[in-house]
Image (tube, rainbow, N blue to C red; front, side, top):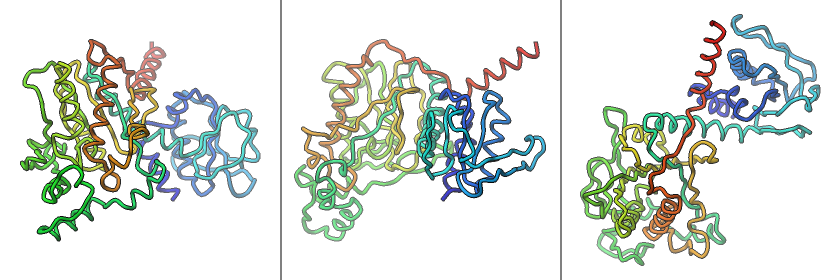
Length: 402
């Protein structure tokens, strides 16, 4: 368990985001790292980061378990510095440190200025490495594009009696199997109230295909069925105008793709219709994937875009979030809260129908208009954090050399 836990942080280290950078961003000048004795190899990795980054000089480590006797730990390479002596947590004067950072899932009662438990640390690192830094790199290339991170409404289990209601809903795969096995007779299902036949539902639910292109990007496999309408590697958006000034892109998983709905009842198609009705010359593009887990594919597709100044991008990654401290964030979590009846919008386990997509599209339209996205307004994004650090180190080095 601990090794898998450490590997999540290692992935971020390899991506260029380190614990010294974390401390700098959070104003921590004197951190104490708490770790278990059997994780000495990872302790040395962290210690090496601070040996190579001299912006934090007062870092210390301590053990949370085992003997109270201090232990000397040696690096395999002399160039990484002298051995480090690590004490037990009970021997540390905690009040001397700005923050105590746990590199273990264990918790320990402390009277500290600030305690950062591993889950908080892990979530922040993953957010920075998987979302903030790659997105900011993209925005360095296209500084006049307006990009907003977003999420999706609360899951059904968050609502009163939602878990019980979900038990009554079929899973999409189970419903597909039932419909395929009973093609000659009608099978009652949650799509009946929307007027779809079983054959329609088979086509709406049955799409789950993508291909990897030679350049590393992924695209959807074309499907010309009138309910699906996947063309040239992406799902079509209804009502698109021939003439427009800018585009609005939606990049994300199956919710943006419009699973459980025909192509003209997706978030993008509903939003396009609202834009047209309000004489707003924007063209909406559905760049959604049919899956949720392949996050890297969405960055491939983001970087394959060539947006024009003033274009708008909504970007949603499964399981990711933003505190809004780096990139603007639009929180959709309450879209199905009362007075909305969640039972009207959820149609299979974990997914909504076209009624839910319409509600979400209305939220996006309100967000865009109330925040003046359709006016000549530019966001000013900060540069990627670790590029700033590299520039600062280079500048200091140049000054010393001079």
